Image (tube, rainbow, N blue to C red):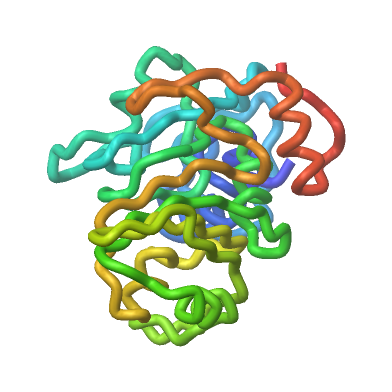
Length: 244
């Protein structure tokens, strides 16, 4: 199989990210650094990433984590900040986050060593819906929510795609807004409210598709059920196979 697919199946990164790692010279096959796409590997080859051997793992892991505030969505951090790897260290297989939640955002995060599923869940063509609950300081009107839902120019210059926004509760000092988006632009929800001139007090991701945190406590994780894995694969057009 191609080297980038091998890396994805080994849980190193998605195929797209694996191609970047190859181009950076961080991958070797049988002791030789590979920088060109199209390299083929088989079961007898030794593949290394950053000098460490990697192998296709037969047992797939699918994890749901309730990421706390103040934790990095990375497996390591040069600045020594807490990471999701420390919260899932009981998992012996190499797993990676599916997309990102920024340092100040909490809630549902998937981690897996199924590189193909990572690639599909993060690819814009599949329009996987993600549901957030945002705490906004003060009030925000339905008219303002409708304007954001239609798509607006964000502070970084990106124009957001249509989304779904509705006020869940309104109090004098704050408003809770449910936000459903299907694109993965960096800090998208935060930038939506910044574009409206609103102060975001807190942000939590509650659902990916129909998968929900339920009663999972902050900082805890659980395995996805076979039915949940099957749902994610069907959602992204993968063949109906449950990883073992």
